[in-house]
Image (cartoon, rainbow, N blue to C red; front, side, top):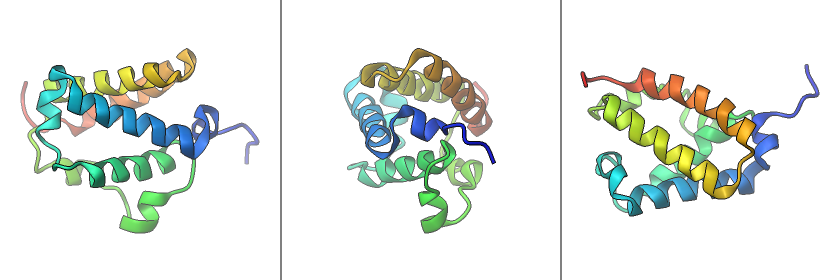
Length: 129
């Protein structure tokens, strides 16, 4: 095992991750450019906020909260009911990038995370365009 800090630790742990997820969903609700992905979420979006927080906790190397409560994330299967194309992928990525900038995540970490977020978001696409 490595003693290197995890991305979860590097961004500031639970409180910073919560701040990131909250800013992400606040931007999604406030900014017209994210209307497409906002429309896919239940209103209110409290459950979506909590699930993303729990998922990202484990994904970033922190506690596996999502897996403990819901089992394997099965991200693609869980997102199949939603029509996700390049536009929705790009909205999600832009919203997350904006949220990371707003809360002051280190630029090097932002780049590292955006590469991983892109790979995952691109894999979620299930419609042309």
